[in-house]
Length: 576
Image (cartoon, rainbow, N blue to C red):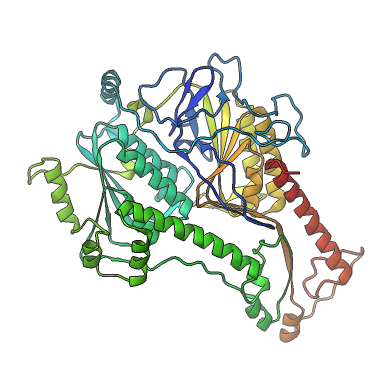
């Protein structure tokens, strides 16, 4: 197993946790008003094997680390005699775990009063001796990890950004590796600055917020970070403007026209071809079945999507206004003006300057005092990802925290080859949970979720195994872009749940459905006859609609699934 970290622990009587990212708040969409999640910090690491990543705990006082502002009350073993545990949890290692047990992270059913940290990163200056040790280590690195002094880290952010750790020969971008590269570059004396090339991105706002936080952290190092954008909308501009300087070529264009959400409905299409969806929806805001059962948007779905859009829009206006030193009204006027001429963006102070890439490189040469005939030394994302953390004094000791990465739709078994790594197969994931639970070196675990949900049974089976893990070792659930339905179901097993401000989470409810093809079969002249024994043997018979007693049975099954989901949600949130 490869090992690395984006955070570090130091020890006194309680652990001071050094954290790579955090959260403020996230909306919950469920059958009732919106609520907010408890605040805490999330931990993550950026090296691993399969769905694992590990970080080290160390009893040494670090020469540099990323510290949060307050303590998380985590106890950990320094001498190997005691396992780590959350001090405010009532679940002990030898306690039985049941569906009726008190919620993790609470005492006597009451919500925890822990003063959770914000998750903001704090840069620590490297001392003289630590810098000497770091440079000494660099002398012993293998050739493919060597970086020339005065190099510029060149990160191209484009397309899909995955939660998984990508291998050396896998293309694409990994969120943990992007964030780790920014952390390493902030401390690496060989890196003079960062050059971000930003093109259209295929990811949610949760990942955007996390990358932005790491850009802000890097800026604290005092090194320069500039961005170059050729095409982009609100997400791309948001990241690019977070850098100290933003440059665009003369032919570039932006789509800064505003934000929107949309929903599609196939009800009318299915009606025309003779297909009748029979959907059971439990929960006012559970809209997953609307795609096939409705012709338009329900009032509950409209309320939910409007609230989500308003949150994202308000946050974007506020942050972009702060980055440009302008008011929210100024930013809104920019969107409503429909500006596409780059010259007007420069005149309005929305970008730094207009330059071709060769002109930008010439400017960087002057900044680094390089002669005109000398070449800039760029280090790309792939090569810099191979730089080991121990080289920069960012690695720790033997004890580890496992990171279980759950990305994609949830199913019970893995179907076919999934090159992208997205998809959570419960049978495989449960094996990983058990390995973490039984592993002696794992003192705690992080459950990193980026999932819209999926199979209800698979979600429940993983919840149970995660609950057993949380009873034995501290478990924190960290949400990325989305942790809805089954994704939230998994998170409920953790001692604490954290999310990005713009994470889409909640969706507490159940949707089940089937299709009646009776009218379609009549149109095409297809006949199907069934001989059965048992009152409900033909529940899956698609050649006719459900009988009234079958509909009642179908509804009761959905209600029971919803009851289990609702009760577990109430348990995890310390509600009666």
